Amino acid sequence: MTIHLTEDRIAAALAAATQPEGETPWAELTTPPPMTHSDVSAVLYRAEHPEEFGTGPHEGGPTLRAEASRARIIQDLARRDSYLAALTAAKEMTATIPVLPVSVNINNAAWHNAVFLTFRFHRDADAVRQFADHLSVPVKETADADPENGVHVSAEGVTDSGVQFEAYTLIDAPAEGPHDSPVCGADLGPGYICRRPASHAGDCEPTADPAEGPQAVTA
Image 1 (spheres, rainbow, N blue to C red):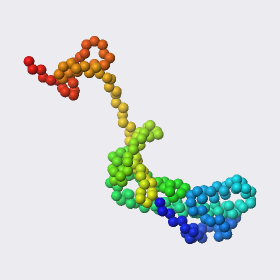
Image 2 (cartoon, helix red, strand yellow; image 1 turned 180 degrees about the vertical axis):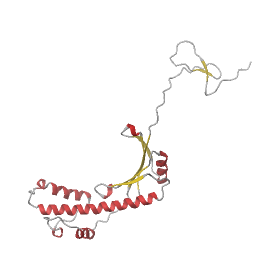
Image 3 (cartoon, helix red, strand yellow; image 1 turned 90 degrees about the vertical axis):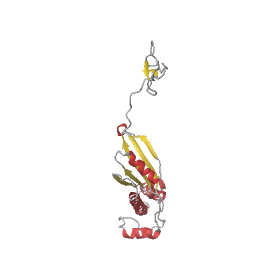
Image 4 (cartoon, rainbow, N blue to C red; image 1 turned 45 degrees about the vertical axis):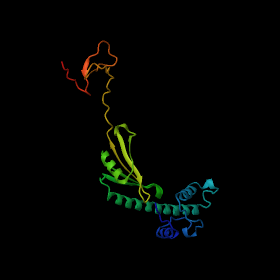
């Protein structure tokens, strides 16, 4: 997924924001702005745990807080890009999919590459399969974590722009029918078998074989 984090864009975002009081001015920071999720996380962690880096509770506090507030603005820029990318993907997909879901949700985590679209269908496995066929992605069926919810039918993929998506529905689990007991199955002449239990005692009983039906006997 494409994001557009540049120093000029970050500078513009900082200029438009109000810096919290008691911090070192952002313009006076000597460290470069963090441009990745791991760098942002490291800055935020250091501000929350300065003692782990040999910095006392007051020493360097204004600068650490300023680096952290700047990092949060950069993080929001990246997340904003991912929201816009997901909205564009949802618009393009909804315009062409053969069946419409009951809802489309955007799930966005702490950084741009974690955005996730979900298309929810209401107890309609066929709709999920049509969705999957249209986008050439596989369908999988798994028992839901809550047995009362039945079976989770889903199709997952990634758009050309890098947005992850899932279409899903919940359907009732197939009812378990009675288990047939094994039968004797002895051949008792044309069109007849013994359908008594396999463990029966005594003589077999001829029953019309459903696969063949009784055969007429010619005198």
